[in-house]
Image (cartoon, rainbow, N blue to C red):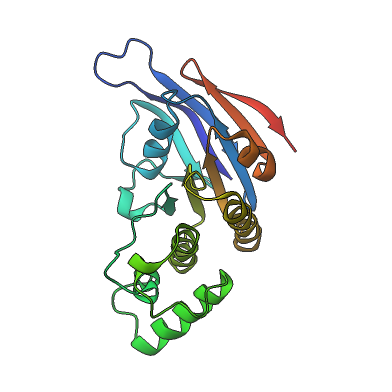
Length: 215
């Protein structure tokens, strides 16, 4: 279980601090809803290690995560517009999820498997700049598969997609979360995304999280 207990943070000049507490179970998607500017990105930045809370705890199966720098946290982050290296091929972008000294034969095999998992078996040689928005998100998910990190943070990942692609990528995220047993945290103000994916939903308002639904 991923558990945040009273993670507290305030920006300079902010009178009321954010205080975040929630639980996220493996194999499930936990959604954080809230208006723009309510603090959703602040929460993700603390989970990823980009912001250090003043107090509180963050644990994964009992392991303290707050003492780990961002590069050592068992966390992957998927943004609204995934920043792939546009001059590299889809396969090269996916390969960045593997350790630098991985033998070439293993890289090729693992990348091919990951691209197949997300339904992009044929696009490995294509430059990222030539891919559609939905294909780029799939490439990013394939890279996440290779990173093999148990926590996946999704920051408005479907907002730039058309409706058909959005539904496809949502289904893929759900399938991978269940198959990989990820603790997936979805931050979104789109209620259709939340309703389609979340097993547990928190509302962020007035600097606090409130559990609204758990199933």
